[in-house]
Image (cartoon, rainbow, N blue to C red; front, side, top):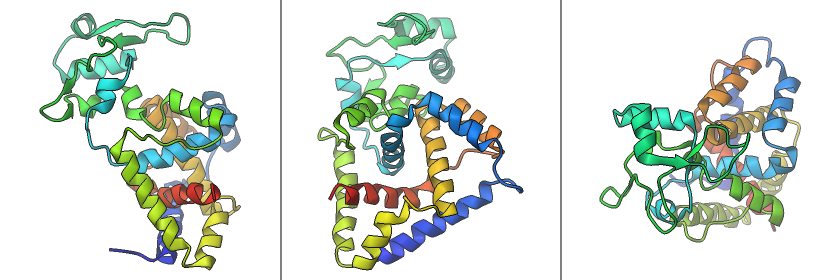
Length: 264
């Protein structure tokens, strides 16, 4: 179904308004404190890029082509990743770590107990299977793989350095998403009123917009740090849960289109 630009905007606004059902009676709790915790996790200087890439992450449809599995130089795994994958493979944690991981390339507190998958530069990830194609542990893949490409640390650093949302020319899924957003932007050119409204929508003080931005940020935390961290932040806000991807996608598409417009 092809919606007009105005209908897309209305649907996105309705989706943002529907997020209010997640807010407890009496409103959010500890809001400023939780925002401060989020600022400590992701520095505010990265925030525009963090939100934008969280929206793109929700919208992209991974084609499981395996290019990341082949071209990524190293894949870090946390102890939680190791436990989750070991259970999936029906292995003990010790056996999994012996057979599939090696010490992390870095040392110190930032690394902690993290290790690296046993992948050498130029080789595929040990869980890459060309017959699938792609990852044979896709449902329990490492958190760093879940965050890729948009919410990888390297991409956020690149966005902040270049002061723009970067593209991934090697990724056909990213190309298709950018083309979808660009097509919508072209259709917006035929409706000046809708285009003007969208340009200012996410900078407005509308309550549904502020809630959407907060929940998109929370979803980004889930993608970047894992579900446990995001669930903890959600509980501190008084939320019963982190929003589902589908609850954020329609407004996320408008947010992605807004980023495209602001580059004009």
